[in-house]
Image: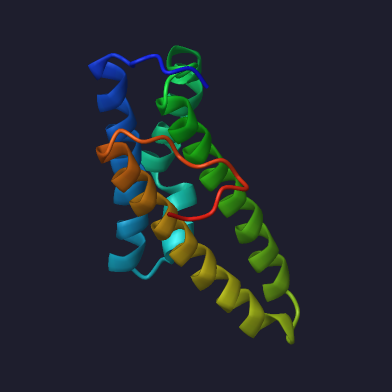
Amino acid sequence: MNNITPNSNLVTITYIIYCLHLFSAINGLMTPTLIVTAFLTGWPSLIAVILNYAKQDEVRGTYLESHFGWQIRTFWYALLWFAIAVALLFTLIGIPLGIIVFWGTGLWVMYRLIRGLMRLSNRRPMPEVDEPIQ
């Protein structure tokens, strides 16, 4: 990744994307739905993912590129774990495990969104996959 400084509009869009995802996730806390369900199916998160893909080329080479990848991966991995949890619910033995996966995924989503916002506010890129937590 280059050290190209992104324009302020792209930084603002990145904040908006995080906030849209957080709005959906927090909505899951305040309603009978789970965090992960609200995160994946709420219109704010869907708009955020569309923005991620639409603006991905514009942030290439900046520290925002790592944030966009982080946001996109968070969405798709949450969808994968959601599908696994739903599959587990179809078996009597898997019901408790499925519920644990739902809750765990929801907590993981909140962690990733908050961590991303904190690093964005410090103008820091998201770490590479194998980089330890700092």
